[in-house]
Length: 187
Image (cartoon, rainbow, N blue to C red; front, side, top):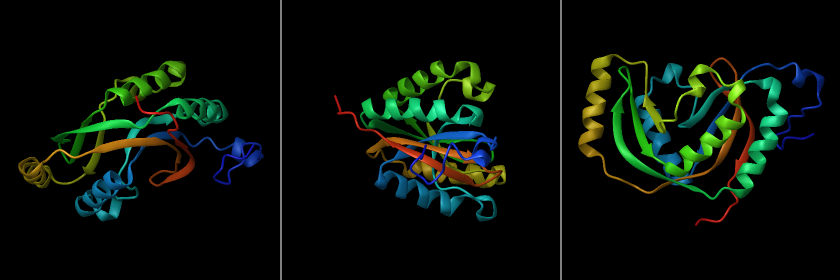
């Protein structure tokens, strides 16, 4: 069974791959570019293995990859792109994140959480607080200064989630497995 990214679930080596799965929201191009630029500018380069992302689940079990992929495919076919409403920046203590209000995204994530409830880690069992981290693991004073700068210049903008992205966690970098574009019509 081909996953579209060249990975085969029937490959014996792939079946033994127990690296956890991460699910994130695909952002529209303009929002991704904007937030990725911020992340590149403010995240410590030595530990910035990832592009900007809005994580939905941090650790789904690889042993259920086939079931997870099938369910996400069916959800994405019926799901319209979701509106993301930027709410402003907040402190992470040693970093800064941009928060979003996103009722449709919260509902979608809740459906996934209910489907796989028995498989979720304590972190993934918590309620979603949609955000994109643009800085982390810096001195708290540096984070405080960036937060003040970002809060002072914050202006709302249009943003949308356009699909789901499934990755394998690789101890730092993420290996993309599959993309699920939202195909449903907007209400």
